[in-house]
Amino acid sequence: MIILLEYHFCKIEVYSDYIIAVMNEGITVSPEYNDVLVNISTKYFKNKKFGYITHRIHSYSVDPSIYIETSKVENLAAFAIVSDKKINMSNAQIEKLFFKKPFQHFMDLDEAINWVKNSIKL
Image 1 (tube, helix red, strand yellow):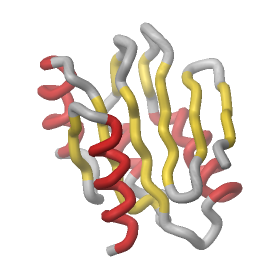
Image 2 (image 1 turned 135 degrees about the vertical axis):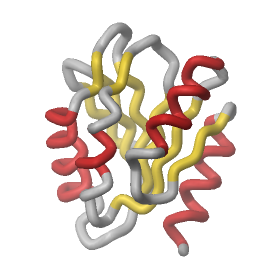
Image 3 (image 1 turned 90 degrees about the horizontal axis):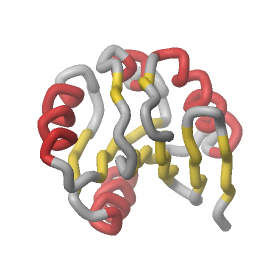
Image 4 (image 1 turned 60 degrees about the horizontal axis):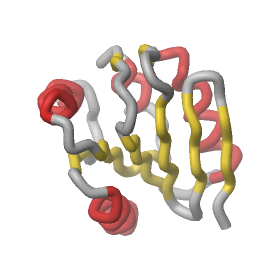
């Protein structure tokens, strides 16, 4: 079962062991958006590991300090970025420096989903 959530800055699909987020065009992802992630982790993944996949379809910016807070979500086991844009590949390398859990970049959504599922089993 997929649960669809919509916020002023993104749309999120909640699956049994991961979420897929698509941020809106032109926003800046900042640490205060972590409250949404914390609420989702508490409501849908209480006492259960899960993965976060950001599918970067639109152009937007990310405050890298968000990853310091995101790393504190205890049951978040893996973080994946999906994009085939060169700028997003470069940005992912910088963002990875701020995140203290498994973090990977993928060109394909299915590959990201498989990696997240395997990562939460570890």
